Length: 84
Image (cartoon, rainbow, N blue to C red; front, side, top):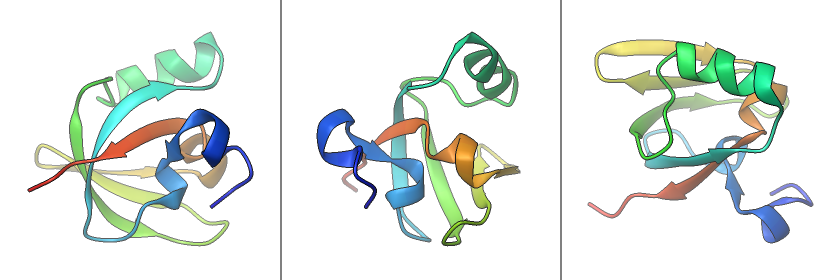
């Protein structure tokens, strides 16, 4: 976990492959928010984490679409785990 996780919530980069998480909010600016929204990452949306690499990209599945998100961008996505 990064040093911001305890203060601001769990980050997408802190998740593990195969988990289902809910997008809570974004900690970046307006450009980042607009980019993520255009990719279908909406607050309240449940997504499946396909792959997380240390300091590498994160691959998520939204509905039937896989999206690759850079590590820096993924670290600004605040999530919560979804209980099955």
